[in-house]
Each structure stands twice: as C-alpha cells, then as structure tokens.
Length: 229
Length: 384
Image 1 (tube, rainbow over the protein chains, first blue to last red):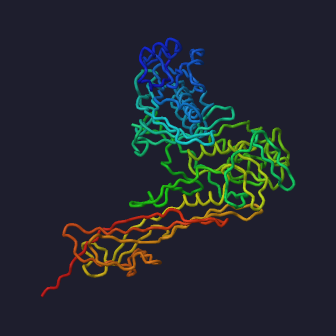
Image 2 (cartoon, one colour):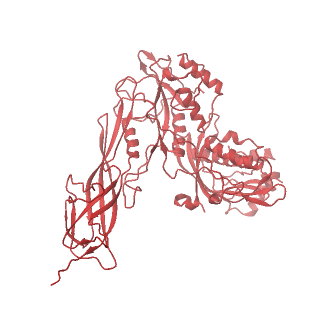
C-alpha cells in the first residue's frame, strides 16, 4: 500500500467533490492511503497526492513545481496550509514542501530515495542526513503522520529567495521495530514533538527552489513558536 | 557558474566593462561616499550551522535549533533593539539590522591559490565561493570547473562565458554578500547575489571604484549601512540601583537624612560601536554609533521630598566601585511600613547618535533602562 502526502485544508470541500476529483485524477496512488482518505487536493486547485505510482495522474494533479513522492504504508505528510496564489511566496512554499516531502521520503525509505539531495543544502541537509541515518540499518521503520501547518512566507528577497516559516506537529511520528512492528520510540525527542521551523529557500540555477538553512524552536519555548501547538 | 550580467558599462582606467544582456538593474542609492574594498576584518556571514543535537531517547533526534531572533557573526552578538530586551524595564524602538548586504572582500590578486578551496570565506575568492555553497547554496559547477575558472581569473584570463570586467586587472575587486542572521540573512544573501548577477554567481569581480564613486550593485555596503550594523551591535548596559545606607533592615535609610543613590552600570555606561570598511588604495569608510546617558530619574512616589543632582547635565550618578557616593541623593520624609520596604526606581535614558566618515549622521531613537531597589526607611525618634 502506498502512503500519501496530503493537504488537509479541505474543510469546505464536500465529500462528493473529493470523491469526484479523486476518481477523476487521484487514481491508484493516493486513493490507497494508509490514512484512508480519499485523495489529497491542493487547495490552490490541483491535487497534491504524494503518490508517484501514477505519474500521469501526478502530472495533472500537482501544482506546478510540487513534486510527488511515494511513502511507505502508514506514513503520511500533511500540509494544512494553502499554497500562496502566486509569486515568489508560492514558489518558496513549493520549495519548502519539496524539501519536507523529499526528506521524509528519504527517511521512510532508509535513504533509498535520494531525491532530497536535489532540494536540500547546508545545515538542512545535515539535519536530513541525521534523520535518515536513524533508519538506514533497517532495524526501525518510520510510521505515522507529520503535520505542517500555519505555513507562511514572512520575507522574500528580490524574488529570488525567501524565508518560510511553518509549525510542525511531529507527535504522530514514531519509530517502529521492523521485526516486531511495535513502537520503539518517537522520531524527535520530547521537546520537539511540536515545533516551529524557519528555513531559507532560494531559487537554484536550474530554476527550482531549494532549502539551504533551517532553524527550529520547540513550541514549549514560547514566543511565536508557542503558537505551534 | 558565470551568469548573464545586467548591462552597465562603466569606464575604469580607460577600460570598458563588457555589456551583458538585459536592462540596468535597480540600484540602491548610497550616501555620497566612495565605496571600495573591505578587508577581511569586516567579515560577518553566518555562524556555523547549528549542530544537530543527539536526541534524548532511543533513535530520537532534535532539529537544528533556533537562534531565537538574534544572529551572530564574527564573535559579535547582534540585538534587535536598543534598550529593549536587555534588562527588565528597558525600552526602545525595535531595531533589526539589515539582513544582508554586498561588500568588497578581496582584491583580484586574491582569487585563487594552489590547494584551494581552503574552506574559509576569508582567504580568497574561490574559497569564498566554495564556502558559500557549503552553507547551502546550490553548486553551479563541479569543484574542478570552479577551480579552473578561478585559476584562470587569478591569471587575469577571462574564462569562457565571462561576464566580469572586460579586461581583468589587479585592481579589480571581488564583491560578495554578507549577512548578520542565520536564516533570514542567508535567504537575503542568496537573493542579493542573484539580484546582482555576480560574475561568479555568489561572488563577483568588479572594477575598482574611484573617489566619490558609488557602487552600482544593489545592497552595496555604505557608511549608512555600516551605521545600521554598528547600531545593531550596541547593547545598553543592564543597571542596578545601589544606595548608601544600603536600605536593608539592618542598615536602613533614615527619614530626613540624605540617602545616596547611584546607578551601577553592568558594562560600559556610554557604549559605542564603530564599524570600519578597510579599503585598498582609498580611504576607509566608517560609521560610529554612540549611546550617551542624558538623564537619570529616581522615583519613590510620595516618599521623598527632594532629590539632588538627578537629571543635571553632566551628572552621571554612577556608582564608584559599586558604591553610592554623595553625588546624588534623596531624602525620605516618612518611614517604611513595618512589613514592606519601599521601592526606589531609577530610570536611565540614553541619547543615541551616529556619524560616518562621509559626514552624514544624526540622532536615533533614545533607549532607556530601569531598575528598582527595595529600601527600608527608619525613623529615629529621640527619647526624652
């Protein structure tokens, strides 16, 4: 079963619409979500199903620039904020989402999916590699859902780069023993079950946006991060 | 790596810069000061990437931590305001230094040397490029290609696709981005580098500036930008109140007897900061920001009848060796309640001024700090 990357800012969308769009475009991949949802829609109008098992569907569903990823069963990445309508804010958030998706795709496959190397640099790459290393030997598997919400772009620079800020709820992510299937621990330590992430994203010479720097504050630290719980 | 550069042809010692494709980019107006090369002494850039801390649980990790609103560079800590946030009772206009700028880094003669890149942003141009990529910027060419291009430029031979000065000369200067805060600063730096279409993506060779000439680069360092950076580096000292007598139960102040009050400044009383951009062949540019105490006020509402010296021009009321002196005093007119000492609040206000080598300057918003001390006041009664 293929997990999914989904966007959940869909409260105003009826199930009928979901089903209609799902049957029209979500096809095999996202419809088989471990979470049981009937498909993920990009609130901007395009689906952002994470499955890349159906490339044709992805091509029509994904917002331009948003790459689709396949996640193992039981793993979900959710974005609960709409993509900005246009401009560098939109491309910056797309870059951020590609960073997030590609990192978790790599983590959930024990490093087999290496697409993240395209979207991540600097200390963000170190962070991703550290996470991946936790799962590389195959003793544990990633399980559960990580939720990104209140995604914003507080600053853009010359249309070429931006700061993206997001709240992260990682409380639903676990490490599961590959042998027994039992939960062996959380992915992040206790202080980072809910945290705020701020990243620097910039346009690469190839045209897509990449994350080069990340800073994170636990929600328990208060301030703006305190809203991330 | 070489990028198409905005069109701008400038004469430089009879040489003409090659025109690129496109229109003239928006340029930031800078004060009427020459801008020229900076030495490595004024190099900020990001602090090292936050270390990924080991998790507390099995298999648990921790995301890179936040700098909690302030960045650091070159050993200096930047604050986001003058006065505010440095101690209880502080106030001041919130202040954020410019997130990034572009400045001269190296002369052409420091382009490349055998064994590069060194891994440092302060040694030469190719090493800066490699260091910038290591911070997270996408590499545009293989390390071998990068080395070959910089080596060619070091030898004053334009590599293929070159968009820098038409004739590479020893007095050309490498300009590169710099910044003060990790995430925002680096994002700004990436954007600024792209905006300026630098000859080597993240660092660009430019003709030298003449006296009085302004750099056409967007976000170029200037005396004004220097003053902004200097201002952001100023931290007003925390203060505490000392009195004589100390005002404790055992050594209480006395009604109708002067109580000396002084401010203990934890740090420089009148802090200042000067940032200098060292030049090659031209006078350096600098900016200085000075905070000066302009008033000290003392209040203990309804409890003293007069004060001496507070607020007088030139009167500092500063503690000497941590002790209050007769320079400033208050006289209490009634004793403390038996179970509650009185609160004596001292507020210090600083005037903040800036000046630059270009003759520009002015007054910035003032800052203030307050501190409160508990003072027990006794009444001596004669026995007849």
